[in-house]
Structures are given as structure tokens and as C-alpha cells.
Length: 292
Image 1 (cartoon, rainbow, N blue to C red):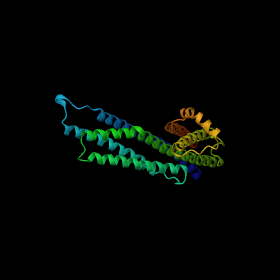
Image 2: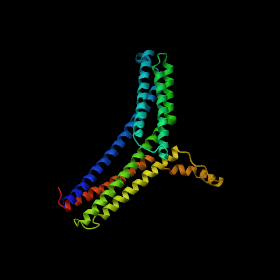
Image 3: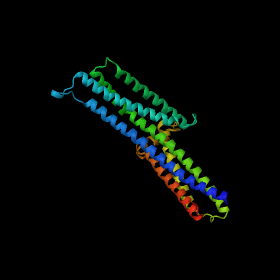
Image 4: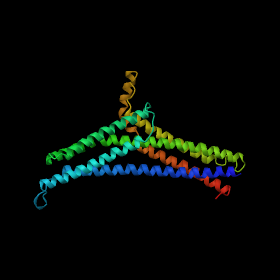
């Protein structure tokens, strides 16, 4: 009996801890995305302010030396935020283990290489900024270059990279949730065989949890599929007719592509619902067997 009680307690602990871990991860991802989004907005505002700033006039006019110092501070802040974005993305992606020869492994390498290129660009900009020969016009041009670099490609590419990281993490969460389901299902069967609870007493809850987990997996896989479409070359069409069909549908297809981050967020909601069923089962088992 003590062994069975031990298993029941383990079910309770596993479900609750797993649920808390999932909620914690979702919060971390939201905070990470929010932090980078806020930094990007601040950077955009700062560079816009710098580029659009007019030379002072009258009593409030800045000397050229003061103007140069001010603009250098703004550009320096912009670069600091850019380095933070690059390093944060690199650290998160670098911590994820993938088969280098797999499609996902190739995407990871592609993004890491891109991040290296971006860091090099910002380092070169930083070196230019520190040059004693940089005059006022040079600083203005440097600020415009940095803003153009970010606006033209960087912001979008960074967003794609962050979405890929989130998709990978969400996919891992669905694997963990599936493992939890199998473990709890196995423990429930053992408790049923011991005659401590009725057979299939929690079949509805387990079925609901399974449906939520499977739904989350489908959403995560769709998010990863979007990443593959972005980063991996499309296979060549076998005939002109097929190519023509794809071309004709290009505009419609583009409009139908869902947002990768929204897919992951929906997957996490599904997983929370699935884990919610685990917690309900845990509470019910404890109540039935009068466990503390």
C-alpha cells in the first residue's frame, strides 16, 4: 500500500511541478520578447530623434562640441541595444541542441552565422563612432546608416530568428507534456489495478489533456514549418504547369501564412489546459484516497 501511495504522491508532485514549470517558461518567453521589443522601440525612437534633430538656435543652441557629444551618446545607446539583442538571441539559440545535419540544425547554423555578421556590422559602427576624426556630419551619416540597416532587413530577420527559437522551445514543451501524459497514464493504470480507484475514472480528463497536447504539437510543428519555408531553399518544381500554379497562388498564400509567434502562444495555451487536467486528476486522487 505504501508503494501505491508513493506513486499517487508522485503523480501529484509531477503534475504540479510540471504545470508551474510551463507557466514559468511562458512568462520568461513573454518577458524576453517584451524586453527586446521595448529595446527595439527605444532604439528606433532614439535614432529617429538623432537623425531628425535640428541644429539649435538662439540661447538654447548647442556648440558643435556639445552636439557631437550628444549625438555620440545616442548612437552609442543604439549600438548597446543592438549588441544586447544579438547576444540574447545567440545565447538562447546556442543552448538548444540540434542535429547539425537536420533541417532545424541547418536553420540554427544559418541564424548563428547571421548573428555573427550582425555583430561584425555593429562592431564596425562602434569603431567608427570612437574615431577622433568623426565630425558632426559623419555622426549624422553613421546614425542614418544604422537606422537604415535595421529598418531594411535586420528587424525582420531578428524577428524571424526569435520566432524560430520560440518554436523550438514550444516543440520541446510538447514533447515534455507528452512524456508527462504517458507517465501519469501508466501510474493511473497501476493504481486502478490495485483497486484503489475505479477503472477509467479519469479517462475524460486524460482524453482532454491528450487532445490539448496534440493540438499544441500541431501548432508548434506549423511554426517550425514556417521557419523552414523562410530559411531553407524550396525544392525545384517538376514541371512548368506546377510552377505556374504556385506562382498564380503566391499572393493568396502569402496572405494565409499565420504568424509564427501567435501559433506558439496558442500552443502554450493548449499546453496549460492540458496540464490543468493533470492538476485536476492529482487533486481528485488525493481527495479520494485522503492524502495530505
